[in-house]
Length: 270
Image (tube, rainbow, N blue to C red; front, side):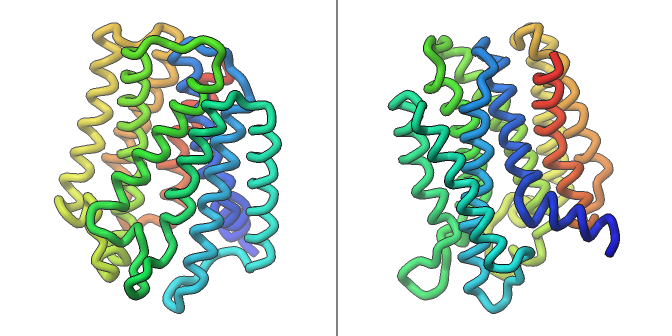
């Protein structure tokens, strides 16, 4: 029983690591927009992310070619716990936040569901996989904190926060698609690495990192958000330059999902 095996089960198969990454993005959105750092909206985003990944695992388990990490009872238990957390948090949530979570959860929960025609799933439709995930996660990480707050930030600040979190999420999704490129090609999925190549995808991530640093240099980022965003942009550039396309699942998760976790940690420590 190796450390890698234990870490893979505890962090990845439970989806604890990716849900913590989503929480980091939501926490950064709060700080960037000048909102109070409230735990409830961040917890909703994290728990909802975990629930959606577990539902996707349940759909994957129906396919003979896919092996999921946790046994069925463990997936069901973790799914029930995460859904309970979402429900308990939303009891005290403002109506607009409840509406966003409710409306946004349905397509996300059906993301891995088989469609009526054959066994093709929503995420296997052309162009769906990269942009659906980026859009859904960005909307949740920005929208839930904004709609939870008593005072609304100005529209320009919300648009800028959306662009920043969208860029970080796009890099995240693109790099995981680099790792999954062979499996995605087998399923005929149209991901960015398969459409433009691995090298161009790395350049895209480097361009996003450079764009984030340019925003900092132009003074478009609030002073208190500069250190965490600069660290996240630098870390993104590092994995874009050095992470092997054939690295292990654990190494990919630690490096790529580690960026929003680093972002959130630096926000929480300030």
